Image (cartoon, rainbow, N blue to C red; front, side, top):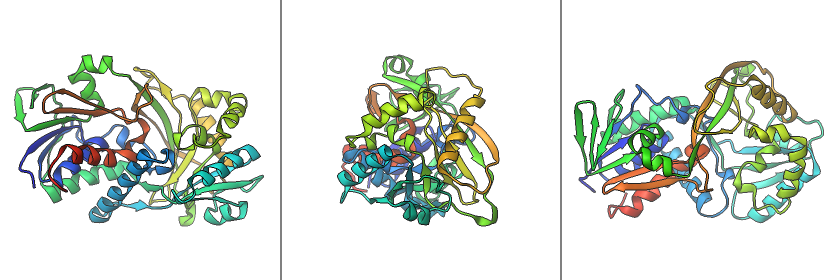
Length: 379
């Protein structure tokens, strides 16, 4: 095992994933977080670990590696998780055709199947049966309650590996492998910059030169469904198929996108595709939209939330649709089609950023692969 030391800046999902990958190899890790707890995009999401969104190959394998790490940590730390899978519903023949092609191409590579309407309704009582033509089932998706799980992982890392966390400590300077917060300094063998705000402020020239923007997502939470009623799998409308690159293998997808461009022009303009997941208390997380730019209006748009709810009603039949919370999250988003940005601005310093909406799904796998590749210490 290593006797090296490392500093990780940012206690969101990427920072925690790096911390875990280092800790299991014997590094003594210190984590700095500018807030009293993680409050950014890592807790403002569905809590979905979402392999179906990734194309078959290295990214899907990375997602499944992440999933295995999630399940291991959740079991050890007592973190609630639900391996429920997902359903994408089809109400038109062209949607069903894309799903059929997806299943044919991925047969033997993934846990997926095309379901009849009756089979879909047996998977979830929350599916809208009206004019349902079928559904795509995937068994690889898992749900956690992100707003609780991120803090629980930090505590787990502190308890199991002796990771030291400095909360309410914003790092104002990185000089080689020494970091500064006000008048205090710390030094380690390696430094990892994992927070978006830290990347932008500590390395402004690199940030300005990077192919990166920011994405604002609007989301909502519905009241706990009555009498312990569960929706089963996470539920998705077919608009999600034109959002996630995992579906790009289907030859008929461009034709479906053409129809959506006409029928759902406003939805595509605001990057809206709609999904629903359920937490341990029975509440439903609903979303989302995608607005791009380096600076965003801090106020949510009511019409976007209304569009999300309207589309949700086309493929779900829920017991109680009262909204109890609304919020937005801001994610980094690469503009060059890449899935992550890894930079080494100076010896011993690594920046990891740009995972966009794939943080929950890819971070553990990405950081495990990165640290394993540069380390001669076996986990």
